[in-house]
Image (cartoon, rainbow, N blue to C red):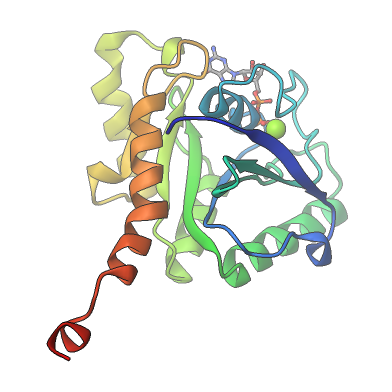
Length: 210
Ligand SMILES: Nc1nc2c(ncn2[C@@H]2O[C@H](COP(=O)(O)OP(=O)(O)O)[C@@H](O)[C@H]2O)c(=O)[nH]1
Ligand SMILES: [Mg+2]
């Protein structure tokens, strides 16, 4: 993806604040501190577009970033952070779920998991919940720079097994720190966001005949 313009277009605390679904959209979801904001920064080549934090549980809004005015990247609030009150977690759980279920322009959901750890209960629940609603998430393993090269296959297997991912093609590993895997992730995102359109616009056999 050749980046021309990147802008934070909307910061939403409620779903009636979401922008019009005028662009294909890719959302990023995962536990607090897994590296969502860092990944959006790495993808957009900006150091501090999305606010990153040492202290988890900070992003309490849904943030829409427009890229080249052709695509939205959406930073969802992290789940599974114990210090946020139950009531607040529940409220956010509902907003995230309604976003995932109802957002008509959503073309890809990226579920982030820390490559160092076995997926937790909250990750498995999110993964299962998404598949139940017919969303096949792309799994992106974050913080690849934190493990040794020779641990990669073992961690991939551990996480694939932990979540129950059948297709290994649906798992990519990245580092927002070293930018390893960022181009490969962009390629995947572009193919999902823009190739469907190309197919839609192709003439149908009916119109070819007439
Ligand atoms: N080493 C390393 N640290 C990372 C990476 N991605 C994120 N982090 C760190 O992990 C912490 C949480 O990142 P952040 O993007 O704020 O996570 P979020 O809560 O999911 O948005 C920050 O201290 C980041 O610097 C990565 O690829 N490598
Ligand atoms: Mg964040």
